[in-house]
Amino acid sequence: MNTTISFACSACGKCCNSPPMMTVPELFHHENLFVGTLGVRPGAAGAFDLVTQGLDYPANGACPARGPEGLCNIHHHHKPAMCRTVPLDPFHTDATQHQVLLHRHTGAGYIGAECIAPGEREDMAVLVANGAVVDPGYRQQLHTHRQLLAEERDLWGTAVTHMLRGQVPPAPQGGSGGMLTLPLVPILSVLAAWSEACRLRCLRYVQQQCALLDRQIGLALQRKREQDRAVTAEFRTYAAAYRRLAEALARDAAPLAGSARDGARAEAYLGLTGV
Image (cartoon, rainbow, N blue to C red; front, side, top):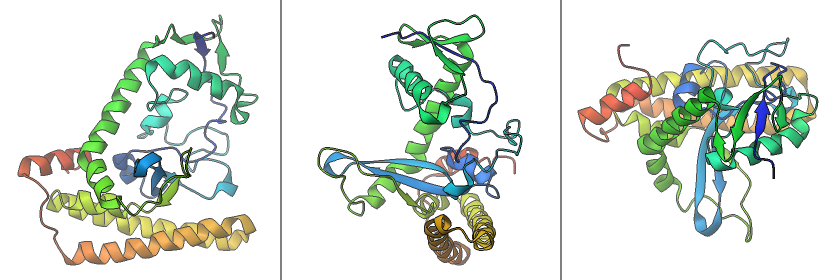
């Protein structure tokens, strides 16, 4: 198998066909643009993986940040790490990135993009070769992205996993289950307990998400598309869950989950330092 893959982004927008996976700080920063969701993918023996990402009506066929000309409207304004890492995948090892690229190269979503090519091309830069990411910019981005994901696991991932254990249905025998999508309530409940500043920031996020969900549902009702119904029902469930959480966050200061140092770290993670 050819493990040398070249790449050149043409800014065609084909990879921007849906909201991306996003870290919680990214979702907080773009709280008026992306509906945040917690994705839970069941695995074998009761295990499951957690990811956070944006959620939108699939019928829209694009990321909410993509403009009418196909370009990213937040490219220079806190562009998500996943979008900076594409076409690579931080959840795969460097040694298997060529498989990720070859899959994208032949995938239906990339037809006509011609941004990925096996082997070397004069008009493209070599991205991976001999089981390694050779482009220094992408190699650094992969490293940075993986550090962000590790911080998420530490600050809320482990706690949310314990919270959801026993509540996630197991995957079918011999395979993995489909992705379950939930509002960010479990994550926000964990983060709000790190410090008073974190609690207030989580409350603001919930309030902004409720307003965004109301707008999204209103637009869907105006479109009157049959394919929007399932997502509208899901968004209504999110809004109800967030309003209940908002009442709790506004009413009660949760017991702090750790030391002042832990709280300061969580505040830095949410971008609250100096705010």
